[in-house]
Amino acid sequence: MTIPSVPAAAAPLRDDRRVVLVVAILSSFVVGLDSSVVNVALPAVRDELGGGLVVQQWTVDAYLVTLGSLILVAGSLSDLFGRVRIVTWGLVVFGLASVACAVAPTGEVLVVARALQGVGGALVTPSALALIVAAFRGAAQAKAIGAWTAWSSASTILGPVVGGLVVDGIGWRWIFVLTAVPIAVTIPLVRRISSEVRVGPRARVDVVGAVLAVVGVGGVVLGLIEQERLGWGAPVVVAALVVGGAALVAFVPWERRTAAPLVPLELFRARNFTVGNLATLSIYGALGMVFFVVTLFLQEVWRFPAWVAGIATLPPTVMLLLLSTTVGAVAGRWGPRWFMAAGPAIAAVGALLMLVAGDEPVGYWWSVLPGLVLIGVGLALMVTPLTSAVLGSVPQSEAGAGSAVNNAIARIAGLVMVALAGVVLGGGVGVAGLHRAMVVMALLLLAGAAVSALGIRNARAEYGAASAS
Image (cartoon, rainbow, N blue to C red; front, top):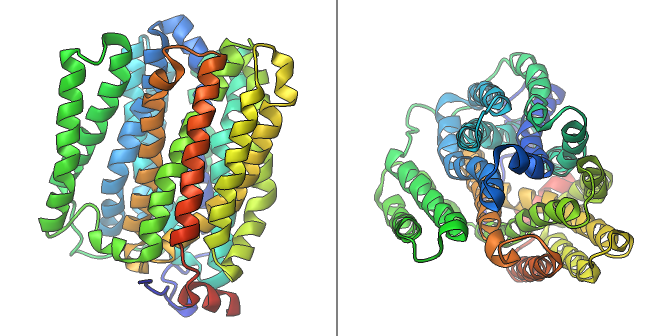
């Protein structure tokens, strides 16, 4: 079942669409940049604050735990209070938390500040994309989502380049100051949007569901990361996994019975929404693993300076910037199915190419570089059609919740794989660990390709009408 999109004339957000698009891009750019810029700083953070691989994992995952779990709440808040207002609140919280990260005296303080950044990111992410859904219709919407995808996705990979230059130049703390620049530009632009989009007073926030989501995701991640330091049998690890698992098990029954669910389960009646989110779970889990592991490998095994490691991971950014907008426009006419199937498969080939990498840095040219290029091509083919397929299958009034669910699944998949990095790597970064990580990544990507090929439908109501408008 596919829920048709609203006709072009019904777009409720009638401000200057260029301003809306820029606001959506810059807001998501802030969140994406901070998600990835930290990776190249992890060795420097470890050297100054200590804690080894566990602190490195928590520096990444503290942000992703709150982002991934609270993004569901943010979708409801977006529908209740308005998308423009929630974007503004999120940017303010994010900026204040970034300052706290920059001055953190210990690893523990840094982790707490990163968690607060995740709260701000959770408020921003679903509302930013929902603004595009509210302002654009038909083929124009697909093209706008393509532009949003190119820039917001590129920020998550461009981050290591900028972050590497900052870390080597003036220190890792300054990477958190970087977020102040797009925030300072974005807030005045948000204020130029005079109209607002909200569902209305009937929208409510599912507090119990939010608690179950945070405890469930946080507990599982806590157990997976801390087992590296304490062991699987440690009481803290066992308790975290049991409590987290129990909360996740209780989440779905609660969502079925509550009057205002955090995750509207009826959205999953739409075939493309369900299949798209299954593909997201697999694909974004793989991507979370690869960028974390490859960035650490380049610095800790091949001894690349942070700025060189950043540049070395640039190829996927180039591919996204070159291809995403065009792919979005073409997929808007032809449908997402085969783009979503081919993209992850090509990226899987790129991951397997990195099995050639050895102890010598010269191997970058025939292993890591071509592997990252293929991953970038695969990403460009897949990301925009996936986003269009998922959001195109829900009614506009549920766009905030639909975007939140998809973003939450993507973030949670990535953070769980980062939490599992210690298990896959064998406790440290090395050639054998890199190879194991790439095999895991390739399998996840191929699973995402198969799910997309078998499950996604090119619905005429969404894509045929779009191409005709």
